[in-house]
Image (cartoon, rainbow, N blue to C red; front, side, top):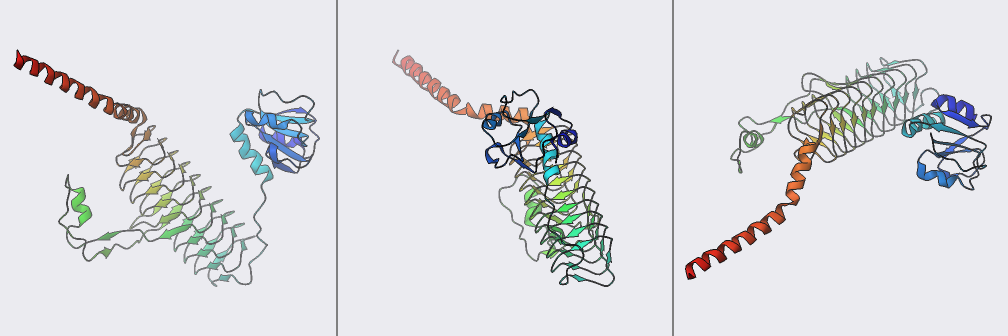
Length: 365
């Protein structure tokens, strides 16, 4: 690939020889060949270009490059965004041979689109549909009546339940589960959980006896261009479907409960747990290990900091942190005053000692 083509693809500024051919993108410390493209977009990495074997590099706009070290380089204005472009240019496609592997099991009434590739030991159930150009890697299960859109990539071990609908260009990573039954149970009489939520009580008298399953009649509907991480679980809804909006990205080890609705262009980071019937707006970011209680509503453009516990509705545009999650400024105030508690207690103790001394003096007088 020519350096000039890379500059054009990234919308960067080419400096020097654009005819340089590169075959691999590499960290400056890991360059092993003159055909490597050194990725030095972090200002701290520019120093590593001294003595490099690379003839070409990508750097941040305005950064001074060592003189006479490179034959050419590309300057970019937004390094992290440029990284997305670089990795797209040099990405290696998954190893998925054409056609359907002999060990795959496809039910006769399943519909398989054009140019679909299906790996070993994969099962496509009755009435399922696989869109054109989609890849199902090994040991994938697609349940009865499920639909997987065109040009998707379903990695090894993923489980797609019955009647689940997945849009186009969706990536599902290893061992994800989409469409398991929701975790929903009820007791014939008032249960311990209901009593605990009914008011300020320290002890419950109700007993969770004879837990009765509430069946999941709904499904899961996933929009276009969604990415679902490894070992993530998305449960089907009770009556209506659990929904994931288009272009939303979900990290590994995320749990999304029944009836949850997540909007478009959201980022749901690792180990997030979203309880049943919560509603998440568009462009929301939930950082790692955030917990969202059931039936909570989070507005558009909200950012929730890592390990926060969301137990109340959050308005659009809010930055929330803490447990329970509150506005960032409020959390900082709480933290600041909490840090001052010891000095406050010490001051009160000193005042009490002085008061005792005054009272003792008055009695002697």
